Image (tube, rainbow, N blue to C red):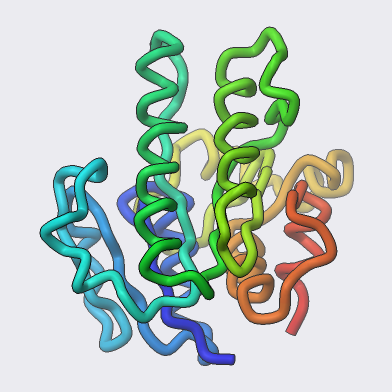
Length: 221
């Protein structure tokens, strides 16, 4: 199964790493990167759509047909944000993009980067975890071919890429030790990207992938 993939969030650390894995993988035929600014990646597989308003794709819907996977890596930190603002960016924007894509590509597999500690009940005390949980739940109700929620904890950046956080680079230098001590809560960015590709091709036994699942799915050939 060859994949024609949409990637969002490619100007961030996770999106850049996922895009990198998609470029390397021979099972990925083409990649459309959608972002408010260019990701500055040039490759024969990669086409870029610079689009400022993620709440309105009406002028570019003709460019969004023919895809069977979306790797949704767009996100913001909740630090300093009110719940209404965080909900609009994290839940409302994500659902609008997903609802647009599922209408145009009903056979699409949608992979969403959530986070370790997400609250599936959407009722807990942590604001960000509630909002992420509601987002996951609403995505899973959409009529995609499949939808997978990725919940990484600490992610070791991919060596040589440009958008890794300084703290992630520093901590990532000790990854073998961290993995030995906290293997259930860590994964590599390579594993995240490969896991998205593999579950889009072959599926996975459950819709929510914690770090252990990401490691497992990302290791499959």
